Amino acid sequence: DYEREHFCPRAVQRVGFAAQLGVAAAVGLPLFLHNRNSSADLAAAYAAADPPPRHGGVVHSFDGSADELQTLLGLGLDIGLNGCSLRAAASLAVAAAVPLGRLHLETDAPWCGVKRTHAGYSHVRPNPAWPEAKKESKWAPGHVVKDRCEPAHIAHVLQVLAAARGDDEAAVAAAATANSECVFFS
Image (tube, rainbow, N blue to C red; front, top):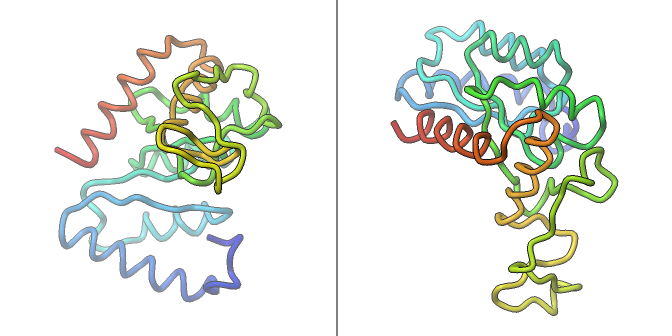
């Protein structure tokens, strides 16, 4: 996470990531990879891992370029998308290019919701089954807090992404669910 280096410098992150890659290879588990402005180093470390991770993983909250997408896919990694992946028209176009067989939907709740300022927001259909509490202090069971991403808002990610792809929402949802089940539960 090269946007939050005040928490951990790049050099320390690289050492930790190399160790995590080794653990993933040793135990045979897939990775869930947080990547913020660090795609080149992430890809280089993943490609250089010895032994290599055997079960791939998902690059979480992907919002990179088309070239970064192709690099990560070429390494055998899948792509996780949420509201942060869909902010600008350019990022929405890249997100729409993720192959259906490598796509995962996520919320990153309570962050990364689809905001009114996002390129694809016009495709969001509010759900009357999720009434909004205007303030967190006014929250009640069965409500969501206004402007906070909740797990139920994964439907918004689906709506925007399916529209950008020109695909049926049910088909995108089924593919993303199958992909996540395959990577993490098989």
